Image (cartoon, rainbow, N blue to C red; front, top):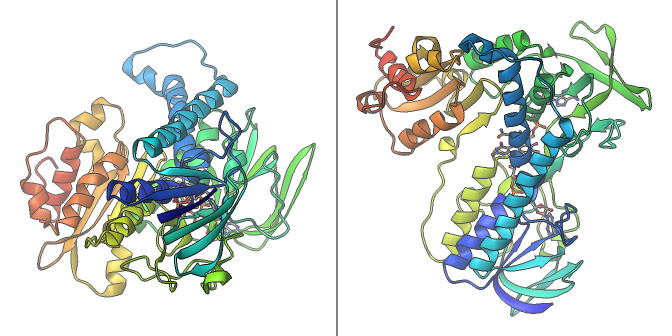
Length: 478
Ligand code: FAD
Ligand code: NAI
């Protein structure tokens, strides 16, 4: 393949594929290169990146299956529904997940064809720059050299591994192995009580594993609002997750008998965790492997991220942009997508903007945790006067009817102007409820604005309204 494009996108994850589609919509001649090892039925790299292949989508499919299993086994009795013994076919659960992944990744191929994005199957690396544009070498199925006037690097991230803890993705797994256990591990160890540890730990706990989570930091879910994190730890512990904070991992031994993790507990006492499988989920690192950034004089920062202009995602090389997990900011699919749209629109001369303070976070545990904006601890550290309003799902008729009354919504608003500064939810459907909060914050709404909007009854969204009223001590149903 030897062609000239207006825009070459490297990586077809949520950042890259969305950037490619938006650029094509805006009239550019676009190609998108993808080299991952997750083969489609033709044996070629599948589109969709981490998110669709080994991240958001497969993990949420497993979360949904395991939630159904737990609901039938433990919660429907409250509704008066009697069921006999419930069992789960793990292989079928995985096959369902794989089918969803196939459908979604195939959907991107369709979207590329529809939008006339040239899909290049192969690994891209920079060769240099000529008067015609950047020269990019493709190795793999569509091997050749591409010339592109503009390049969007969207190469994503990969799991961080710990020194001396080799990951084989059979016994000791990162996210890739943890999404394809072919049988139920009776005892599952998890290193890292972050988003992946809690989500995938929950999946396997619900279907019957005894799950032990070992976390280095002394505080649980440090990025969350403290009140939410405290409530979450209480609920997850009650559900049966054994969570040990402040540990230091000394080493891992894995053989056919299983896995033994040696660690020091929070008092420094040596301990051993014996398990059948281990998930190592200690964060992710940006992926710039084999891009040959030196050829265009781009240097990654000390943590491996590609430095960019915070507003435009432009790198130091003119016409080269970088988006998504490979640059600063939260490693979230929707953040990557928004940056993809932003760069495409900038190239077309538009003036897009991202307010990073309004990017929502969701942890898909049960109950879900979601937030947008500042936490109480951040506002205190900034010395910004604020008021807080909190309302529990326990006092909401819809939540009680659904038997999903754990948790609460907390709204933080400026003490003087009433502007919403942060919204924190632990509770049912928090992932959907947070969208209202993100919208409100994008429009710089006041808590009063949320309180004045008519919310449907009975609905979980009424908790949002009541929390807004509570910032002014005038919740109506409590
Ligand atoms: P990626 O999705 O990582 O895609 C980058 C692509 O670039 C890859 O396919 C890679 O093969 C390709 N590539 C790399 N180098 C080259 C090269 N030189 N040439 C060609 N191709 C190349 N986020 C959420 O918002 N919600 C969630 O629920 C969620 N769940 C997650 C669950 C798990 C288990 C994991 C691991 C992550 C999850 N994430 C979630 C994070 C989300 O997956 C990432 O933030 C998102 O995928 C980042 O998108 P991206 O486009 O920057 O990179
Ligand atoms: P994480 O950053 O969420 O959590 C990692 C945890 O491991 C932290 O609590 C950290 O203190 C701990 N840790 C680090 N080193 C350790 C060690 N040596 N021993 C014990 N604990 C240690 O990272 P995670 O869970 O790997 O997820 C990576 C990223 O993927 C997330 O930050 C998020 O951006 C994205 N993701 C998003 C999801 C969502 O949006 N729902 C779901 C899953 C992943």
